[in-house]
Length: 161
Image 1 (cartoon, rainbow, N blue to C red):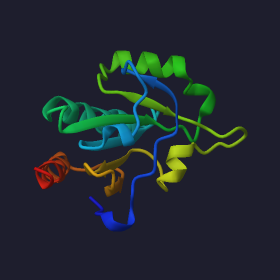
Image 2: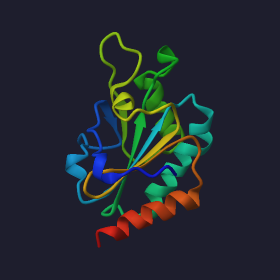
Image 3: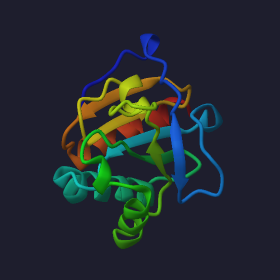
Image 4: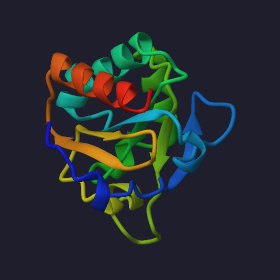
């Protein structure tokens, strides 16, 4: 995973239009004290469906929710008409996604989502790790090995204990 200099990279706040799988909206400020695993995906992205979303679910299932919060970010930058909220709700149900999923907001008339732009994402899947202090520590586009991700998350969890 590509490491990020935490001193110069505070994680930008998420800009979410709608939340799924959570009773209340989430914010990075509200999650301080936990490691945040931000998984950006599109439901029509083969790499996301085959690798990224299942990996995020495994992370969600494995780590203590008091230490690690997994957030899915459905960030649509192509095929906008096919990836509406109703389709995502069905996708989340069919793929048994149990972690919170935010739908990235678009500025009116803009095809690029707000959070995707703030984080300078190149595409999906993208995995971002944010430490307990709210600093971005890793940013990776494409498939990431489970062992590498798990080791990095474990290091971030152990850092603050």
